[in-house]
Length: 242
Ligand SMILES: [Zn+2]
Ligand SMILES: [Zn+2]
View 1 (spheres, protein in one colour):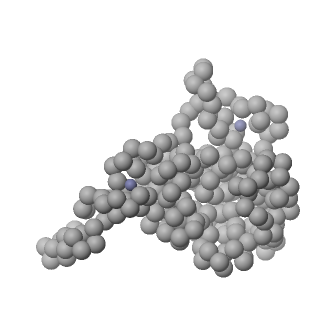
View 2: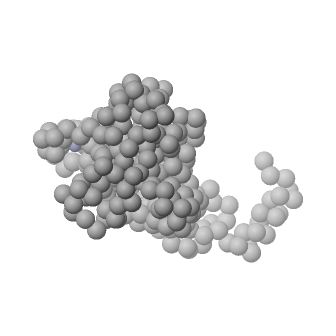
């Protein structure tokens, strides 16, 4: 609870520095809990069933039941399940870009708060480790933060001790995946990750966290690396899905 004096200071700060929408910069109602304007808020869309139970891809509404997608039937991925919360479009895309390229952790916190309000974030006790997709050390130096690690901490605040950023290392400083098609993405990432041998992964049940699931190439490569190092199960959580 704020004291009268604290309330007065907060009100003065709202006048001097009006709260701004993290996505578009519009002013937000004073005292708002979520720093997103009404128009941006209405644009945010969540991933819904029917889904592929394996890769989490949204399916056509026919039948209204979850069923395996053709890609997973043809070649099951090395992870057990991948799930995302929102569609990768504004304002989610803007908020994630603000985190990734401007180090804006407030933007990421706003997005995760909106997701958590739906009560959808659960890391069941059966998981031993939470591993963020790593950045190459030189990219990490340039950016100053790994967006996947920031998101893992925001998504699973009660399981911070399980978050193990060192479990995976990125060996290759690959070019941006966004410029490549499917086959080129896979080639670009082949051998890009390694498991740190000093972290015991044998028999471990792992949640792998990333910001966006696009074609799944990055998380597939990471999951494969973790499985090869002995992990019993890898599930994927990404905030958004393209
Ligand atoms: Zn806005
Ligand atoms: Zn699938």
